[in-house]
Image (cartoon, rainbow, N blue to C red; front, side, top):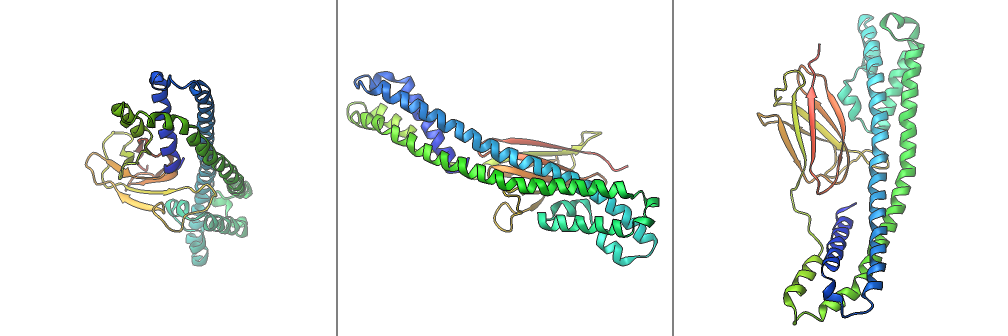
Length: 313
């Protein structure tokens, strides 16, 4: 849910709880039981749609991230072997086409990522007769192509998931309006008690006010440490970026890929006010293998993530 939807659902829940806990405040109106039944059903529908929306958001990002990581790792390893061949044969042009760090490869936008992977695999095919000594064979290239095809398929699926989420979002917005309308009779009843019961009146309208999301809320608490010694690793570089539901990389805005440094001696880092969604995090520390993970952030809920980094042999 976005901030506005979450605020309305929270407000509706608080208001409904007050009705349940204070039935005597509405006892004088014979229509209250029927109105409450309609309200309960509307809120149940609202909650179900909100859950569907969040589930689609989460499930649409994870498969694509997994396919992206699998293709990146496989094709990076193939490219490194081809680069070794290029170095040994003094083929500078070939080396420039296939040489790239794993971190840089993973950070490329989808279209550039696919293009770079195709270039590496294409070079492997071109020089295939000379590459078996470097452990690059036809099956090696076939596996890379299969993984890249899986990633491209996930990108296409993102389009359908985006349509599904858009449909659920529209339904949720309509349901929120319907639920708000069903509160009007209760609002009217409480209004008659403004002078006779000011304490109750103020309590009701405090619950009926839209909650404000606090500024600079901590969204993610990170900790980076040595996997063998459990010692913190200050100085670790963390790169993170949000994964769009339509499979496209961001070109602007606060969710664009960011790089931060862990300065705390304890290896901890707090990230504030991240919007709801899935993020790709990469931790890099000299002498250790990069570690990448997908983190799902939900506004208002603290997410804890640990990076146990392993030393490079």
